[in-house]
Image: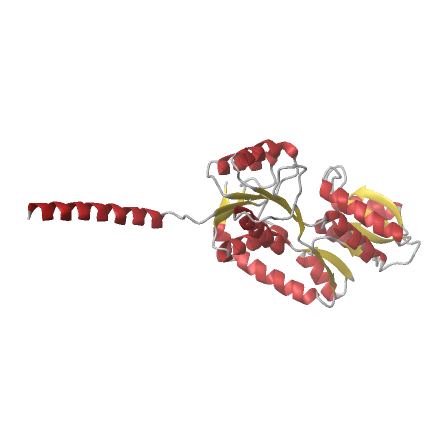
Length: 329
């Protein structure tokens, strides 16, 4: 009888350990962890990217977060954030780099720990990256240049307006646009930064239009510049087509209303989704391409309403429960 009781006690003891271990296991999230470092949540573009990445996490059954540095577009804050995340031992990292080579030493630490690093939106010259997922900015520029040329006549003059050319994104877009415009015999008479010394856009655009009164079209390397350019053009009572690059809702609305003919739009939602999808494939040991173009669309009056409807849907998502997954450091 004593032996039976002893065996029973031992059995109960090991059962308790097993139940405790099972409970502890269920408390922890043992799913694969993919961390996504975004740039901001303040613009339409990045809200769409963030939502795409979060949807991929959910649909693929992954653990992870979309993380936004508190101080926004800061190289220092992004570097600090990467150091903090390294201590969490993610299975993969997706990062939209702020344009600087300064983060490469930190990314090398991820490489040493066999954590794959995928770059999204902005590419960095680093041979050990697993993949880059984003817009091919040279191709985008070519499409934008061809689109602008289609609205003009051979020999017409155009202006190319950009941000800082130290930004390789702007540089590639300008290169592509110039190539298409020159092929169509359109004259690029001015290529200039769209800001004056006080970072005022309107005065810089007004100066360009005054110096080059025969300009028949404008290509701007981002939609904020495009919208400011369009505002100055309207104030002067001119009819000059402006082509942007992002598909900002206001630009699309102008097309729907007939104020603009067409523009180029990127696909940040797809970019976010594909980035997480590729990270998952990498973790599973599947081969992924070194560079994946998330694509661009030409927005005209025919498809402007569909584009606006999609943007409004994403905006509603970002203003609702989706913002709860943003983790700010």
